[in-house]
Image 1 (cartoon, helix red, strand yellow):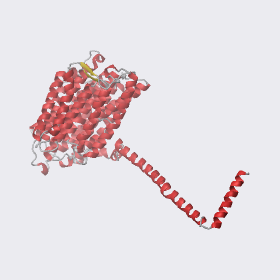
Image 2: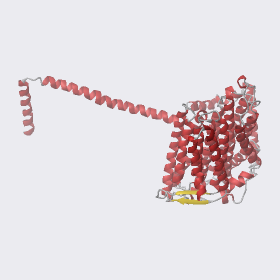
Image 3: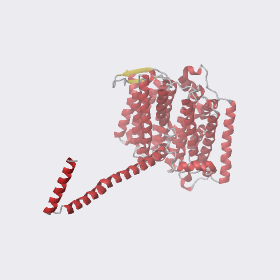
Image 4: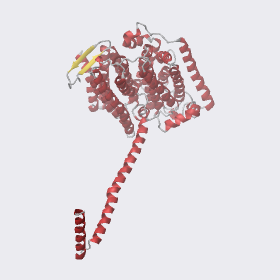
Length: 605
C-alpha cells in the first residue's frame, strides 16, 4: 500500500516531465496512458484506508500520507476529470504546437493534487499546495503574450491567500503541538478561531471564492480552454472544498452557534449573488461560465458553513455536481471555439443545426447548474436551501435569488449561441470531433444519472464522510422540504418567463438582461464592477501605485536637499569665504587677532 500511495504521486509527475521532451505524436499517448493508470489506481484505492509515514525533515515534519474514504473519493473524482480532459485535449490541441506544455502542466498538477489530498502532515500538504501555484502560472501563461499578465495576477492573488494558509498552519501547529492532520482537534477559542480563519482563507481561495476570484474571468479569456475545465472547474474546486471540509469537520469543530459559521455563510452568500450578477451581463461564452464557476462555490461554502449535516452533505454533493456540469460547460465552449473560432456571443447563433451533440451536452449541463429537476444540481441545491432556511431566511432568499439569475443567464447564453438565426460566418461549421464529444457526453450523462439516481453518489461518496453525524439518517432520494421545492420550481419558471418577455421586448437574447444592467441600484453596482472596485488585485495595484508616487516624491525631495540645496549653500558659503580670504597679509593678521581675542574672551569670562 505504501508503494501504491507513493506511485500515485510519482506516476503523473514523471509522465509530466516526459511530456516536455517527447515528440508531438507521442506526448498525447503518454499523457493518456498516465491518466488511465492514475484512474485505475484511484479505483483500487477507493474505500481503502492506510497511513504511511517516512522520516523527512525532522521537527515533526514527517512525510506522512493518509488514505481514508474522504480523500479516496476526491482522488477518484480528480482522476476521472483528468482522464476526460486529456481525451478532450487530444482533439482540441490536434493542430496546436503548445500541447506539450499543457499535458506537462496538467500531469504535474494532478501529481500535486494527489499529494495534497493524501497529505497527513500540514507541511507536506503545503508543499504540494504551493506546487499547484507554479503549474497554475505556467498553464495560464502558455495562452500567449497577453496571458502573462493574467498569469501574474493569478499568482499574486493566490500567493497572498497562501501566505495566510502558511500562517494558519504555523499557528495550528503551535496550538495543537503537532502537524499531523489526523491528530489535530482544536476548540474554536481566541487563537483557535484565528487559526481557523487563516486556514479557511487558503481553502476558499483555492476553490475560487470571493474576494480571491478576479483572476478566473481573465484566465477564461487568455488561457487554453481545457485549462478552465481541469483546474478552476474541477481540481481546484475539489481540493479547496475538501480542505475546508477537513478544517470544519475534523481539525476544528464548527458548530451552528459559532460566529465562524455565520462568517462562512456570509462569504458564501456574497459569492453566490455578486458573481452571478456579473455572469448575467457577460457577452463572452467563456467569461460568463467563469463567473458561474465562482458563484457556484458560494453554494458549497454556504452549505458547509451552516454546520448542519444536511447542509454539509448538500455542499459536498454540490462540489461533485459542479465539477461535472461546469467541466462539461467549459468543454462545450471549447468545442464552439475550436469549430467556429470565437466565443464572442455577438458572433454566434444558430449552432444547434451545426453542432447538435454539443448543444445536447450544453443543455443538460445548463439545466443541471440551474437546478432544474431531475438533474443533479437540483438535489444538491435543495439540500443547501433546506439548511440555509433553517439557519436564516436571508441566506435562503439570497441562494434562491442566485438560482433565478443563474437560470436567466443560461437561457441568455443558450439562446444566443445555439438558437436564433444562423449567421453567415458559420455556414461551414461542423460538429466537434469524437475525441471532444465523448468527454462532454460522459459528463452530461453523469449529470442525469446523479440526479435521477442521486442515492448512488450520496450513499457511495458523500454520506460516509459525515459518519455518525447523520445518525443513520439517509438523505438519498430526498429533494428536501416540498414547500422549498415548489418555491424553486416557481423561481425557475419565473426565470423562463422573464427571458421570453425580455427577448420579445428587446428583440435580442443578448439584451435580455439589459434592463437589470442599467436599472437603479444595479447600475451603480455594475459601474463599480466595471471600475474594478471589487477586484482586490486592481485595487491593490492602484494603492501600490499611489504609495509608490508618495515615496517617489519623498525620494525626489531628499535628492533635492542633498543634490541641490546643500550643494548651493556650500557653493555660496565658499564664495563668501573666498572673498574674505582674498590673500592679503593684513587681512590674515586681523582674523588672527579677532580669533585670539575670541579665545581669550571665552577662557577669561
